[in-house]
Length: 68
Ligand SMILES: [Zn+2]
Image (cartoon, rainbow, N blue to C red; front, side, top):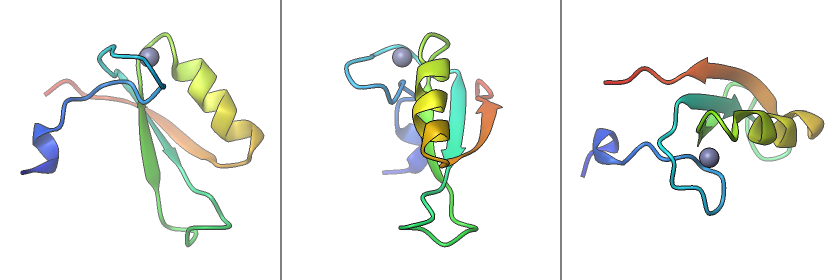
């Protein structure tokens, strides 16, 4: 049971596409400032998920996922 074994699938509800982006975010009401949560996104949903986080002021950075 390692973190690496988890399939890298888009976090968008209902989407089964392989993730190519990592969206790192923080909710200041729940998390300390240095804490990062991350969502994975496919090409199609990167913009949608980024916008969801950025309108709430949660989005910190978007990084390309390196294929392993
Ligand atoms: Zn997707």
